[in-house]
Amino acid sequence: MDAIGYHPSRFVYYPCSGMAKTTKKKANKSPKPSFTRHKVWTWLLGLSPLLGLAMLVGLASFGSLPDTDALANPKTELATRVFTSDGKLIGRYYSENRSDARFQELPQNLVQALISTEDARFWGHSGIDFIGLARAIAFMGQRGGGSTLTQQLAKQLFTEQYEHTSWLERAFLQKPKEWIIAARLERFYTKDEIVALYLNRYDFLNQAVGIKSASNIYFDKDVEELELHESAMLVGMLKNSSLFNPLRRPDLVQSRRNVVFMQLERYGIITDLQRDSLSAMPLGISFQRVSHDEGLAPYFREALRAELKELFGEKDANGNWKVAKADGAPYDLYRDGIQVHTTLDSRLQLAAEVAVKRHLGEELQATLNRDLRSRSKSEWPFYEGIERKDRDMLVKTAVKQSARHRIYVGKFCPECERPGFYIRKSDTAGWSGMAL
Image (cartoon, rainbow, N blue to C red; front, side, top):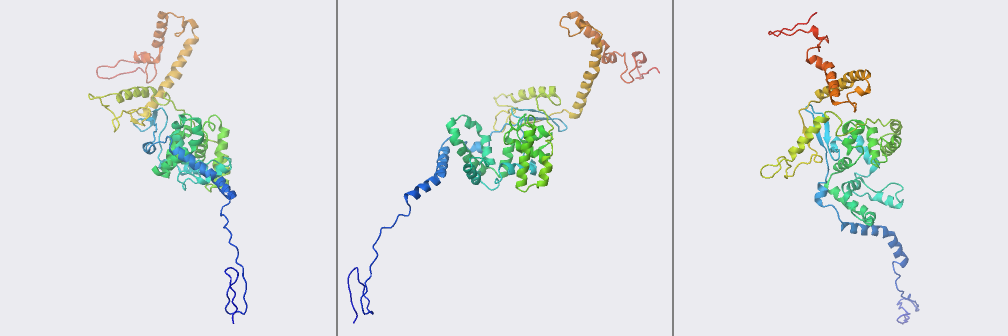
C-alpha cells in the first residue's frame, strides 16, 4: 500500500514509493534590481559628454544660421580682369584679388597634399569626422583637431556672423553651428566642389586671395602648373598664413612644408626617399607683386577704369541700367569678376615701354647729367630760387639741343646719324639725296 503523506507545503505524494519524503520549497525572494544606483551614475557620467554636445547642437540650431539661399550661393568677391588683344592678363580691379579655380584645374598633388594634411577622412565623412572629434576631446586637442575641411569652409563663408555675437555664444555655440552648416554644405555640394570652394576662399596674404592668385603671386604660375613642393608650401600656409608667411619667415614655412611631406608619406602618397629629397629643396619663391599701378600700361588701365565706371553708371530714359546683370542689378567693377578684353597688344606695349625707359633713363638722363655738371645749382632748371624767365630759357635751350628736336628741324639724320648739312631736301618727284 502506498504511503500517503499530505501537507500543502511540506509533503509531496509519491505513488510508487513505500514511504513519504519531505521537501522544502525555497522561500520566494524579491527580484534584484537590474541597475543599481552606482551603475546609473556611471552611465550618466559616461554619456554626459554626448548629452552635452547634443544639448549644444540643439541650442545652436535655434540660433542665427545661414539660410538655404546663402548656402547654395555663398557671397564671393571676384576681381575684374583686363586682357590684351593677344590674350595676356595685364591688370585687375578688385577689393579682393580673387579668381576662382575649378576643381578640374587643381593638380592632383595639390589635392593629395590638402587631404593628407587637413582631413585624411574627408572622402568618407558627411561634414563631421566623429573619430577625429572624439580624439580631439580625449586628448584635449594635443593630437590634432576635430575640424573637417567642410567645417573650415563653413567658418570661412560665415565668419562675419560670429563677429556680431557675444563671446559666450562664440565659445560654446560656434563649433556646433559649424557642424550644422558643414552637414548642410555636404548636401548642397559634391566633395570636389567643397575642395575647390575651400581653396578659392582662403587668403594666402600679399594680395593672394584664393589658390589661383596664390600660385600666380608666389610662383608666377597658373595653378595647374604647380609642382608637389610648391603645392605643399601653399597647403602648409593653410594652418595660419599670417604666421607661415614665406616673405617674412621662409625657414618656418619650409619647416611647415616638411610636415606636409611627412603626412604625404604617412598615407602612402610618397616614399621616405622622396620625402627626404623634397624636404631638401628650397621654397623656390618667384614673388610677383600685385598693385593697381604696376604692370603693363598703368595709364591705359587707369583710363579704362574711369570709362568702365562711367559705363556701369549709365541709365536709359526709363531709369534702368544700360549695362546690367540678368536680374537688372548694376555691375560692381571691384567685386563681380568681369572679364574686360581690350584692343591693346601686349607685345607692342612692352616694346614701347622698353623704348621709353631706355630713352628717358639712359639717353636723356645722361644728357641732363652732363648739362648739370657744367652749371652751378643756381642755374639748374628745377632750382627753386631761379626766376621764371631764366627757367624757361634753360628749358628752351635743352629742347633745342635734344636729338629729337634736331631731327624734327632737319639738323640731324635719324638713319645715319650725320649732321644736317649732309641732308638734302627732296624734289617734287620725291627724290632725296645725301652727300657722300
